[in-house]
Image (cartoon, rainbow over all chains, first blue to last red; front, side):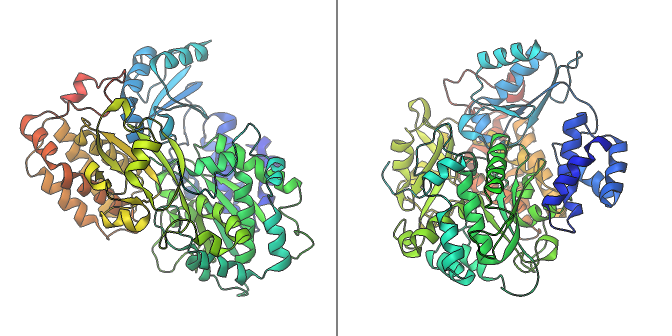
Length: 155
Length: 442
């Protein structure tokens, strides 16, 4: 975490004084972006840096769906399965991705390239079905577009 | 479509979201005028007089919320734009964040001036990538131009804006859960009273407004409350961004003047139901609002009073169109799975109730339903109502009871025959995807 401290300090200056606790989420996001997941050592270091209870960080990590305590595949495919996406074929998308990658939601391919997940509404219902790949939304996902996407990410 | 527009007033191009483009449209002239010519209470008075209603779902009058803030009470006040857009079916704030981020920034400056706020926040859901880049980019542009963090136009007024990203939680869209999250904790909602305008962020008076609500402020202050009131209906002044999805020919975000005919909006402006099918029903304002049948929407207009008269609401403007032939049991299954997933676990009735709703609908779909399961779903929904800190459990109950009241026969059919009466379909006919056989018959 140490190499991120300068960035954290810059972030801190944007907040009013006394808002150290608020920095837990942005710091964890940055740590995860950097390492790919949040390690025990990160929790200890962040708790000390912000002077917040360790349990607060543990709670945050388990409460929000985007935080990870373990590494995942290089490409994280998250297929929305809420109402509008389901009405436009999300179940087929999830099935297709699973078959194509040979894994079930929650699993990672043996080569570590892909992790497949389902998720709830991404706020992109007008372009359903939607698959989020790492940070990016891929919209109107028809089967041939899914295949092209996997093809592209595999190389 | 006919009807006046207040937000979608410019053509969206590759750079219409930039500071230069916003300035060319007259942007940041209003905040200049405000700091030079107005007193904070005058701004709040104008907003109150406009009758602007909150666009997050509850339609609470914005001016009344602002009016609770006591000026000169010698403590910091905070302002937060709620950009945690997560009510399924809703994607309209995204339009503002992506295409008019400076309108939000200017509106927040005006609100901050009115409420004596030095530090304001935009709480944006963690999954939003492009919307985040756009609003964060606009904030940086505004800092570089001296509009943020420094006195404006030689006045004493200065304001900072922090863009704060969530990390995946539906309940953080609820204003008090949002503030708890903004304090860097798990997003548990808080009991009221005290109201957030009395004790909000770090126990200080805080106004949390939806992005679209705030986006209207610049126009209201620029053109006056009276001009705003001339748009829409007497009880619902202005316009609403409606995001429409599901089995509809032309999904997307539309700005609708309040009072516009409901059925015409779907059948004409949005191109009608997908693949020429008949309309079965509509979820009018996010999945927490009660479903309305095709016949029920016929006489309605798109404003709060009209939709409320049919027992539902315009909510967050997240409209979902459902075609004839869609299985309502499967639809409810998706809804209760979602609520179960998103229950934060703080209140027992919601934590347990959402699980029960989910498991019961699952077992109906698996072919193991019992006839009294329908009563059981209703009983759980009703027992939940009003017993929890936030409204999520209540909303899940309304959605459940709403579907059961109108489509009970579909549930009875599945329980008795062990299979859907509508082939278990959620997709429109003609879509490439079909439901796996195993899931259909459990």
